[in-house]
Image 1 (tube, rainbow, N blue to C red):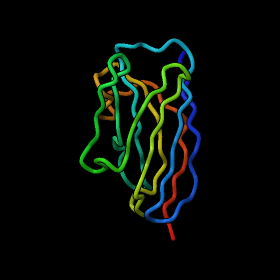
Image 2 (image 1 turned 135 degrees about the horizontal axis):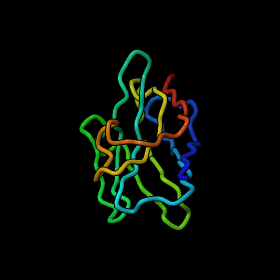
Image 3 (image 1 turned 120 degrees about the vertical axis):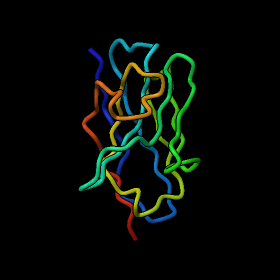
Image 4 (image 1 turned 90 degrees about the vertical axis):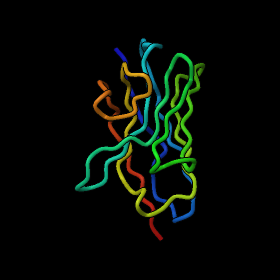
Length: 123
């Protein structure tokens, strides 16, 4: 059974950087996807970045663009999210997720979630 455990969250000042990690354990389907998502209070969960496990192709929505970079270390079984130039509106609970779609480009494609980790951007 696949399990996802996030780490690396916390508080950071605007303009700062943070790297999130998601330890992926268990038999993962290389035809599927992994992704990062976030949910702020009172808002719907949204996609931050996704990738296809088998070929490494990536997806980034316009809202995060090139500020956020997703990567997967197959040897370590760890999914990363490098976040730069953080803004107060990036404050949210961040989740990693696994699915069977191409890029996990939307929460509806995710069938397994991590427990989530808080990221707060504030001066």
